[in-house]
Amino acid sequence: MTRVIDSHLHVWDLGLSEYAWLGPQHGPIFRTFEPEEAVAELSAAGVDGAVLVQAEDSLRDTEHMLAAGDRFPQFVGVVGWVALDDPRAAAEQLDRWQEHPGFSGVRHLVHNESRADFLDLPAVRASLADLARRGLAFDVPDAWPDHLARVQGLARDLPDLTVVVDHLAKPPRGTAALEQWRRTLEAVAAQPNTVAKVSGLYTDAAPHTVEALEEVWDVALTAFGPDRLMWGSDWPVAVLAGGYAEVTAVLRELIGRLSEDEQSALLGGTATRVYRLS
Image 1: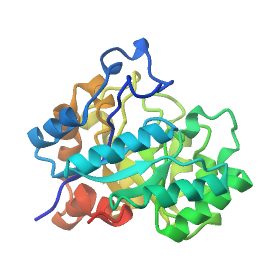
Image 2: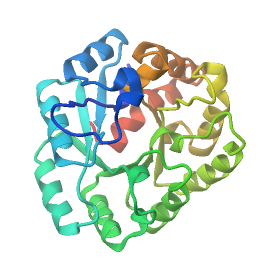
Image 3: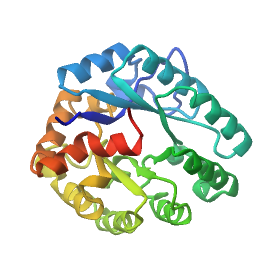
C-alpha cells in the first residue's frame, strides 16, 4: 500500500521569529500556523506524513520544525537551514541538526538573496559538497527566473548532491515566459541528480485547477519522470489557493492518471528516497 507523503509543508510562529517575507499583504496566511493545525489538515486529507520545510533562513525556524517533529510522528522529515556561505558554521550546524533522525535536507531562500550568484559562491559550493557527503538533499525554492539556470550548473558540478527544485521553479503560468521556463527546466532535468516538486504552483495569472495545471504538469512529467517527481501542498500558502483539501485534490487527480507504480513514486516513493525517510 502506498504511503502518501506531502513533501512540502510549513509551520511558522510569528511570535518566535520574523519571517521577513511575510506581511499583511499576504492576507489569511499572515498569522501563526501551529503544528497541531497542520496535523489536522493531513489527517482530514488522508495523508500519512509530511516533510516540514524551512520558511526562514534562521536557526530558530529549524529548531521550531525539529521540535514539532519530536512531538508529532506525522512529520517524517525536516528540511532546515544552515549558513551555507560559512562552511565551518554550516558543518557545526549540520552536526547539531543530524542528531535528530528526521533531519533530511537543507534549503536557503535564494529568491530573497541580494547576491544573485549565491549558488556559485565558493564557500556555498564547499558547504553543498559537505551536504552531498552526508547524503542530505538541497532544496532550491522559487528558482525562476533568477536561479534556475544556475541550478543546472550546480547539479552538473556536484553530481553526488541531490538537488530538489521546489514548486517546479515557479513556472510563469499565464505569461509569455512559460516557454523559456520549459527549456530551462528541461536542461536542469537532464542532470540525473535533480528532482522536482509539483507544489506551490499558485499564481495570480492562472487558476489552480486540473485543466490549468496540465501544461506544466506534462512538462515536468516528461522532463523528470515519476521517479524524480514528488507532490507537495505548500500549506499554509495553499490557503491562498483554496486550502489544503482543494489543492491536494487537484494534484491527486493529475497523479491518478498514471500507472500504479508511477503514482506510488509521486505520492511517496520519491520523497522517501530523496529525504531518506524511515
